[in-house]
Image 1 (cartoon, rainbow, N blue to C red):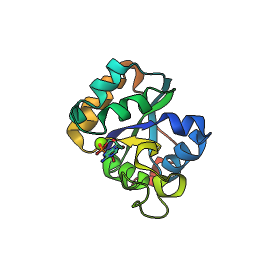
Image 2 (cartoon, rainbow, N blue to C red):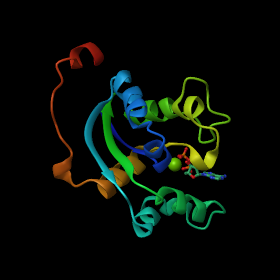
Image 3 (cartoon, rainbow, N blue to C red):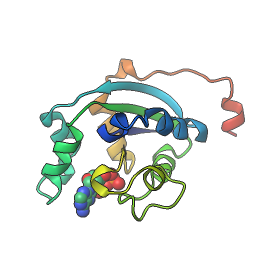
Length: 149
Ligand code: DAT
Ligand code: MG
């Protein structure tokens, strides 16, 4: 069982797509183990996107991600990191496969609706940055036996 960090970016909130996007992760079987709505500061955004400091798109990315509230989630399930990224689609919505969140709901790289951790190290860092241990809830679902073999 694996955990990943997912964020619904300000465009997802503004466009009323929160339910649609979370629903896609839920329907895949991923379990929500933490969730909150936050309007992050530029300082916090710099921490979250520290790996992209100095890149040409960095300032625009910080402006976008701090432009309104976001919804932060921790999702749990088999191969959660890979599965969440596959559900989101490629970074550029123009190249994302049909059926993914970014392809079905977006058009441009700078308005690509969602973020998902890209590996186990990133997931551990991002979950720790966004949530305290008490905010991560451990609970069984009655359907788990029909989702996890
Ligand atoms: P991802 O969000 O798919 O993990 P990333 O970590 O490489 O992609 O980049 C973080 C975000 O920055 C991405 O969601 C959109 C933006 N971004 C990345 N590369 C970009 C580029 N070349 N031009 C504009 N925005 C870019
Ligand atoms: Mg990334």
